[in-house]
Length: 499
Ligand SMILES: Nc1ncnc2c1ncn2[C@@H]1O[C@H](COP(=O)(O)OP(=O)(O)O)[C@@H](O)[C@H]1O
Ligand SMILES: [Mg+2]
Image 1: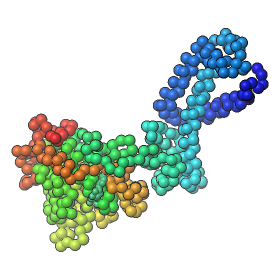
Image 2: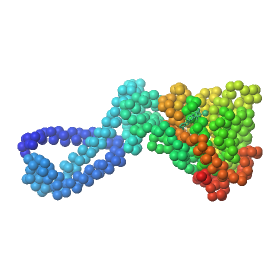
Image 3: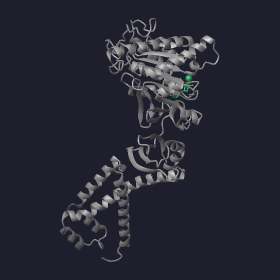
Image 4: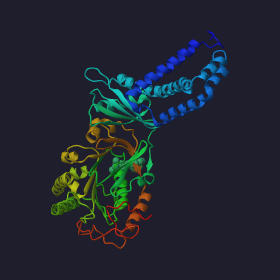
C-alpha cells in the first residue's frame, strides 16, 4: 500500500477510526453504567445499521465498494484475498465500524446532555457542605421531547434545585417540568421538556379524560392530561392569588364531577354572593350556600350525616362507606374563599359563633370523613393559621396552587417555591398530589357552555324529588336517572350527560 494515495493520508483514516472507537468506548462506559441512555429510537437505529452492515457485506460488496472509490488502497488483489476469508471475518470490521458510528452519534448526544447538566449544577453553585456537586445518574428518554433524569443529589435538598430552576433551564436549553423527590432521599428526579404548555385549554377538549365516578381533570401537563379521583384524595386545597383562576377551577371541577359521578351531592359554600357556583343552583343535587349562618347549619348537618355513616360502618364492621351498598350518596363540600367563612372581617357575635363552628366542623370532616365518602375542597387566597386551620392543612394532601406572590405562600401549599415561579398565566397552576408534582394549565369553560352542560345534567333528574329541599342528605329517596333511564349506580363508570 502506498503511503499517500489520492490525497488521503491513511494516518487520517486511522485517527478517524480511533476517534470513533474512543466515542464508542466512552459511550459504552456510560451506557454500561446506566443502561437507559439509549432511547427506543436509538435502539431501532442501531439495529437498522447493523442490518444494513450485514446485507452490505454479503458477497464482499463492502470491500468492492471501497475498491471502487480507492482502488490504490483497496486493490483488486486485496479484496479478492479478503473474499477468501470467512463471511464473519469479512463482516466484522464493517459491523464494528457501523456500531461505533451509531453509538458515537447517539452516545455523544446523551453524554453532552448529561455533561451539560452536570456542569450546569456546578455553574449554578449547587453543592453540598463539602463542596460536592450533584450529578446525573441516569437519563431516560420518555418521549422525543421529554426526558427524565435521575440525579444523585450528594445530599443537596430538593428546594435548592427548585430555587435554581431557571438556571438549570438555561443550562440544558429545556424547560424544567418538575422536580420530584424520591423515597430514597439521596435521589431526585428532574423532568425536562422541549414543549411549552398552552395558555388556554378548553374544558371540552380534556374533560373526557376523566370518565369514572369520582374522576375529574386537573389540567393539561407536558404531554399528558392530569386527572384525579375525588374518592382517592379525599380532600383538596386550591390556593393562589386573586384573579389567577381558583373559582373557575372549582366550578369546572364540580361540573366534571357531576358529569361523571351519579348521585353525587354537592354543597357549594360560596360567600361571595354565590357568584362562582350560581350556574349550578337549580340542579337538584347541588346546594349553593351564600350566608355564613346557613353555611354553619349545612356543615352541622353534614357532620351529623358523617356520624350516621360511622354508625353504619360500625354496625356492619366495614371500613369504607360504599355508596351503593350502604345507600349513602358521595358528598362533596366545596368552599370557595374559605377565609370569608373562617375569618369573617365584619360580622355580628352570631356570625362569629357560626364561623367558629364552621372551623370546628371542617376540622372534623377533614380528619375523619375519609371513610364516610364525604369530601372537602377548599379554595383560598392564601394559607395561614387564620384562613385555614393547621388541622385542616395537615389532613389535606391534594393541593392545587395557582401563582402566588411569596416564597412562603408557595411553600405553605406545595412545599417549595415552585408556585411563585409560575409564569403569570391565568389558569396555570402547580398540582401536587402526594409525591407527584405537575405544572398544569387548568381547563377553561365559558358561561354559555357551562349552562348547556348543566341543563343536560338536570335532565337526569326530571320527575324526581329535589333531595336538598328538606330533609337533607340522609334522604336518598331520589335516584338519578342514567342515560338509559335505569337507576344510576355510583360504582359504575360514567353516566354521561345526555347531550
Ligand atoms: N383555566 C383558565 N384559563 C384561562 N383563563 C382563566 C382560567 N381560569 C380563570 N381564567 C380567567 O381569570 C379570571 C379570574 O379567574 P377566577 O377564577 O375568578 O380567579 P380567582 O378565583 O383566583 O380570583 C377569569 O375571569 C377568567 O377570565
Ligand atoms: Mg375567586
